[in-house]
Image 1 (spheres, rainbow, N blue to C red):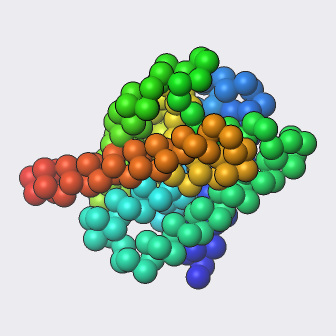
Image 2 (spheres, rainbow, N blue to C red):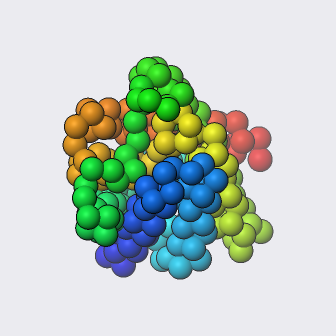
Length: 217
C-alpha cells in the first residue's frame, strides 16, 4: 500500500504544480516544460525509493511489458495515479476559483499545431516513445541510480519543449484524464487520444527496448 500511496502523492503533485504553472503562465513553453521536468526530479528523489516514481500509467505499462512489475501492482499503480491526478486537478480548480481551465490537453484548437486527431496521435506516440525509452534504459543501469531522476526529469522537459505547441503535451494518461474530467466539454471528448496514444508510444518503446536494446546487451 505504501507504493500506491506514494504514486497518489507523486501524481497529485505533478498535476497540481505542473498544470498549475501551465495555467498561471498562460502555457509559457519554457516555464511549463521546466515545471513538469522539475516535479519529476523532486518526486524521483522523494518517493523513488518506495514506488519507483512512475506517476504515469504509460510508464507503469512499460514496466509491466518489460516484466519489471506484476499485473496486480500495475492496476494498483494506475488506479492511485488517476486518483492522485484527479485530486491535484480538483485542488488546482479550488485555488484558481474555477474549473474552466485546468491545463487539459487538446488538439485542433486555436494556437495548437496539432490541427487534427491524426497529428495529435502521432506527436503523442513519438514523444512518449522517447520519454519511456529513456526511462527503461536509465533505470536498467545500476551506475545511473543516483542520477536517474535527473535524466528522466530533463527528458520530460525536452519532450514538453516540442509538444506543448502541438497538444500541450500529455505523454501521461492520468495527467490528461483528470483535468478533462473536471473541465468537461470539448477536451473531455478528445481525452481518449491522450490516453491511447501515450500507451501506444509506451508499447513501442517497450518492444524496442526488449527486442533491440536489451537483446544487444
